[in-house]
Amino acid sequence: MPGFNFKKLAPNFKFAFSGIRMIIQEKQPFRIMIISAILVIAAMICFNLTLIHKIIVLFMIVLVLSLELLNSVVEKVLDFVCPQKNGKVKKIKDMSAGVVLIASIGAALIGILIFLPYILAILLR
Image (cartoon, rainbow, N blue to C red; front, side):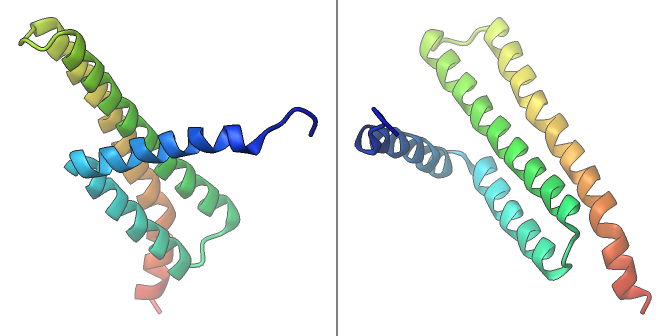
């Protein structure tokens, strides 16, 4: 492509991976989510899910991890802007965490709906 420079793009990826590495190091909930995602992907492979089920599972994993990362960004920004305790900041942080919780519960319910028939098929053989 004319004018497209891969060398200029590389630092952006470096910064992005640095941010992901940072959240993995600093946030235990994110590490737990990564481990859960790996286990779910392994189950997805073992149960040989349909393509649509694989897409849904992967989408939910990406959604929850992205929202957790965004939640961490919100917390960091608020801690920077207002380092002292503040009731309004706490409310914002709680709401941001609530977004992740709702997505996580939704992902778990979707996971149950997708995986349960596969599990039952194995158990009822």
